[in-house]
Amino acid sequence: MTGKNLDHRTVADSRRDFLKVSGVALACTAFLPELLSSQPNPAAAQDTGVPRFELDEASIATLQLGLKSGEYTSKKLVEMYLSRIEAIDRHGPSLNAVIEINPDAAAIADQVDAERKAKGPRGPLHGIPVLIKDNIATADKMQTTAGSLSLVGSIPPHDSAVAAKLRAAGAVILGKTNLSEWANLRSSHSTSGWSGRGGLTKNPYALDRNPSGSSSGSGTAVASNLCAVAVGSETDGSIVSPSNNCGLVGIKPTVGLIARTGIIPISHTQDTAGPMTRTVADAAALLSILTGVDGRDPATAAATGHIEPDYTKFLDKDGLRGARIGVVRKYAGFNTDVDSLFDEAIGAMKHAGAEIIDPAEIPTIGKFDDAELLVLLYEFKDDLNRYLAWLGASTQVHTMKDVIEFNDDHRDQEMPYFGQDLMVQSEAKGPLTTPEYVKALDDCRRQSRTEGIDAVMDKFKLNALIAPTGGPAWTTDLLNGDHTVGGSSTLAAVAGYPNINVPMGFTFGMPVGISFFGRAWSEPTLIRLAYAYEQLTNARKPPSFLPVADLSLNSKK
Image (cartoon, rainbow, N blue to C red; front, top):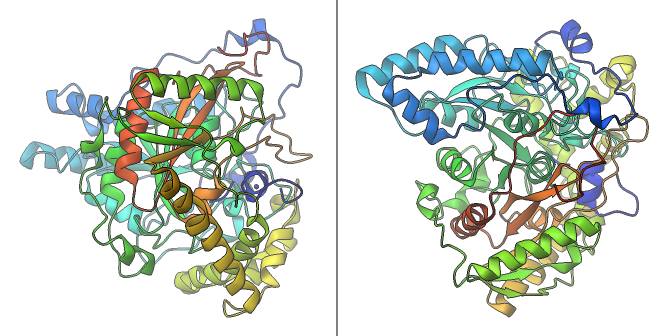
């Protein structure tokens, strides 16, 4: 769920750099990527051969209109998206975003079509094809592996809370998406979007570029119109960073707003699932059906009284007027084009009536990076061991130690490019009563919350904070691993507070985003601001599927 490499960079940069289809034979062969050409050829790149698609950029609302009118059925939508996956994910540019197709998708679509005809739709997600990340458990014919061959064949005792919510809403779970294996907390030199089971996912804007992680497949799939919407998960950066790199809206909600029951974990203090979509409206609609208190996830108890049944009611085109927004300048300055786009975004918000406080600096940024890593290492071992115990006898690995040994025994398949040093460090940690862990957790919460986001918002009476989400997508490098240049996910991630990425613009044809973040449970405010900004700028453009980034483009196109 993370996204980072742990050297001089922040944990979010590092986990995005470090933390930053069923069946082993198919996973290890058909999905392994071909090596990309390293020589840019802009003229050739323009003819990608990707066919036009009838459902390109189709929103939930558009699809529901088609279902209501009879232009589409849910089964027809499933068939169209499956054809799209076959054409450009399995073939064509071979994006490798979808790790597995749900063999029951067409049958489920038939069922929800019949229900619509007999009773009408259950809600806005009724009959809508959705992809979910391969760390979100489903008790069906699909795998749930976090991209690891060690979990192939394991059977969850029941659906995750997220999968159950989707089914209850009448959505069709179309399949599962590839990810950075173990949500990118296996190695400090990992390549985002690569897993032993799924191979390497490509960025649809330029195939030599990285989609970021760990929700890499969800990001590429939604950007490429392989589904209507998708669900990702984040510990630090794993929703907002792929959304940044793939030109999407991504909501990382307050920890506890969405139950984590049945999601392969890293950290019970930072993990959360969240929407990844092409528009803020779709993200709000998907968020509305994912939230809820779950007695199996103690973190959700704090959400009582904070859950909105319909987040789409906060979609307000005039939502920026009168808002007080703080600029976290410390998270800028890593790329001149991104800085220029960020300044243009600030100007647009001012023009729309927002009051901008620039800078609204947070002095604790960077002071808790080491503490965050300690917390994650301690919690990863404890939480993963609990998840594996939940799987029971259906899995061949029962502890993190077993996973490490499996990786050593299957080194050629699991560790051809990078190792598992972070897993080894995590396994060496003691229980969650260890004073080192207790102090690190206290430092993280205090410096990110009371001395961080809460303090600056109180000081300047702010509605939200903004920062560039990250830089443009880096070149995928399986030899050296990820090499991001900057990112702003860590503060909200460590605090467990909400964060929304919205497309901000392009540099050399590659998308970059802006993050709106704030206090716990402030999703309604952030959705209002993000939607108003989106409607004001309309920065998203569909991907071009270029073999390599076209550096002949003007930097802001």
